[in-house]
Length: 380
Image 1 (cartoon, rainbow, N blue to C red):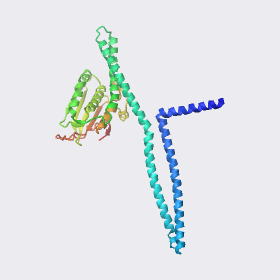
Image 2: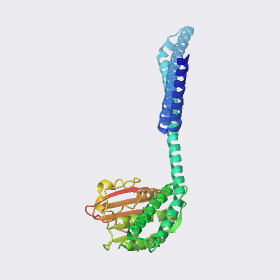
Image 3: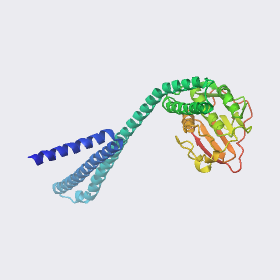
Image 4: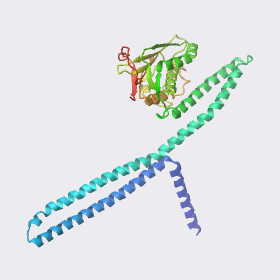
């Protein structure tokens, strides 16, 4: 009796463990759903095949009996001669019914397979996204308090030089963490097309605002920010998202450009041969290696920056990933051209506002820079 109870307890524990794995492990849940759906599909296919064989057999036998009875009643062999044709007609009709039924069954089960197999993954991603958003919101306030307290501490004239440098490094790291959190929140608030409300706006004004905001940072590093804008600047977009795009690109350009060497970052707004508004940011920084260029849109991807001697170490690794998604929301195209030691050129083209025209001369295709590599994505 004790052995039987022990076995039942083990079986109950095993069932409970499997149930918990199914409930909380999306991979297991997806696997089980697919197996169950495929099993049901296999059973139905066997049942339909058996029914089709039985149906064909019954109709064939019925047709043979009918033609034999007809031949016996009229005393003629004509019905017998038409028997093969009648059997072929029955078989063709049956095969057609079975074929249409199988197609409908496969389509239905394909839909169910996709729906039930992807639902655990979808729910897991939604929970993960909600969790990241909640954590980011909760962390923002304590970070702001820590930064404020640190800045107040720096006002103490009695601070020693090592302590002052340590507090300044702390502020730099706090800024980096805050940027990462803001970028994480951008994934939740700006990536969905339904949330990005678009309106006709002047891209030049957004660029001017962001550039003015970063003039002090660039000047402190000895970097010159220069702007050149054409007449065609009206696009249909979301101002918050466009400001995020410009901020991320300009920060990257500043962070990856050597300091105190009089380097220049050029920001242009022009029109291309497709009548689209193009935002171009050209820096003379360290550039991107070819092997890294095709991964720059991956979140948190970092290339080999050892050659940069600390340049770019304050970035979050999310900037270009967010830019890529926001360009997709705006149905634009993004191109990055770069080479190590030759700088980077980022070009984003946006569809013009519906009422806008193109009064200026269209710019030609971008010049080819020898030795540079390019990666581009087009969501238009």
